[in-house]
Amino acid sequence: MDAETEREFVSFVEARSHVLFRTALALAGDRHHAEDLLQTVLAKALRHWKRIQGSPEAYLRRAMYRQQVSWWRRPGHSRELSTDRVPDQRTAPDATARIDLSLALQDALRQLAPKHRAVLVLRYLEDLADDEIAHLLGCKPSTVRSQTTRALSRLRALCPDLDSLELRETRR
Image (tube, rainbow, N blue to C red; front, top):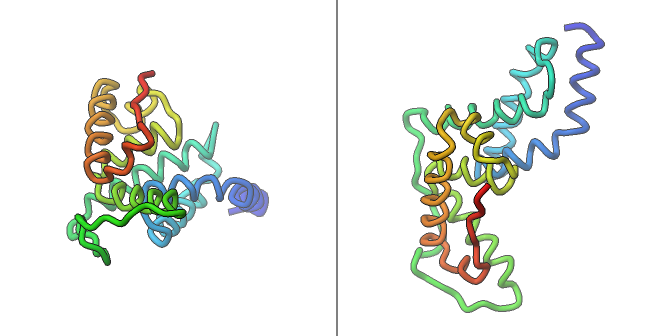
């Protein structure tokens, strides 16, 4: 790799890695896994940086989605999560209710199926339209809408405290 290409790559990573990490964190569900995800994708992108044309950020986001799906499909990937609380145990809301809700939402998101989590991340965090999500995930826009509905329903069941926020699905 020549020095100019390396400088260009380093400059891009310094400028945009915080934004890409936010997406990786939403996809992965925990900080350590998100760091691994972003590092893996950046390492692969470095080898092909000259060939990445157009929008490198879009390319890297798509690579993260695909890498995460690849890891989900890996044999031995466990969907079980260890927690320090019994799922039915509820605490009374106090001054830290917002933080508690945020933590409960994170736990609920981790329990969603990978496809459901990807659809919610793309729709609500990345603010993509159904057509764009369908293109990224390789399905039809109607599938995106039905998966979003199912994911939100499952999320509400896993985190009943969300009813206080009146989460509504928005059609695009």
